[in-house]
Length: 220
Length: 133
Image 1 (cartoon, each protein chain N blue to C red):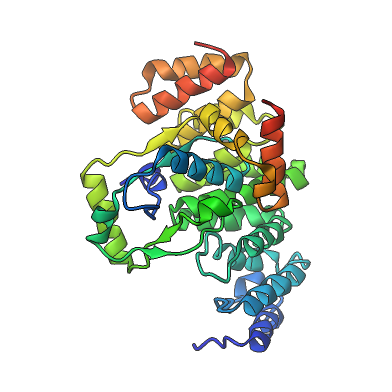
Image 2 (tube, rainbow over the protein chains, first blue to last red):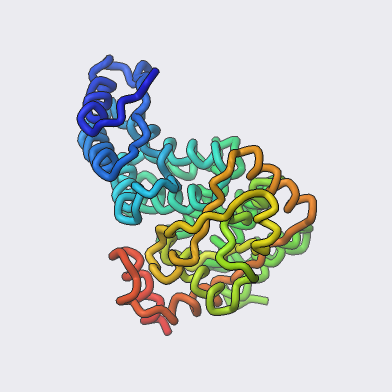
């Protein structure tokens, strides 16, 4: 399939995608990659409008999440900020979309942007935090689990059970993220669990994170 | 290579030598501003001459909120196979990332002039860190 790159048909493609059916599962058209600043602005505007519809939201959130970490020159800092804002407005749909993007690539810039979106989603609607904790438990990708934890550690509320569970994850990146998060959230329980984990943790990176977390907590 | 190792592998060699301390601090601050977080920052430094054995290094502007750091940004516009080969070789050579701890990340951010930071969110983050000083 050849994708048109003009700004006009770019918008029409997106509109056609939403009109194709009433079932999100049958949205099959992918948004074309924007090649110019105008196409990029148009993509963001069209998706912003389309995501007002709850039915279309999961599809467009997934489509937009493909552009997290985009390195093309059209994705300026301002447009990347707008991309994150539009995604965050998708609420729970954004959680699945960005974690899927993280699972597909382990690039740090994708994870950083994904985590910024997740933090924004929860700060806009704190009631979504349990959903993010559930996604952590359900995710099979270690990178997605780690991103969930890194997003949670920016929260004022304390999803302690999830963080403690993450401290014993099979993947070192997840344990590393959990140690830093617990150092941030504090509390006697956090300190106790960190000390226990340190006693049996063999990975040097994670051990260092636990020690740093204990320092931040004022422990030893 | 584990995802944690990949996470620590940032493409781009900011200069022909290893980063000098000021540049490293600037890059760390830029990443922190981008994240709006004082989470640890892991950097894997690879000498330019090593990277050039695999392909050309392209100078491109970064998109962090710190223009000064963006000037240090470089891209590796290679096919996936070449990038994978570099990553595998680095892994085989046990190349290790250097971690900047949260306290040092905060210190790097506090040195920034908020007026030199682009974007409301990043500027607010810098101002909040400086207020904690």
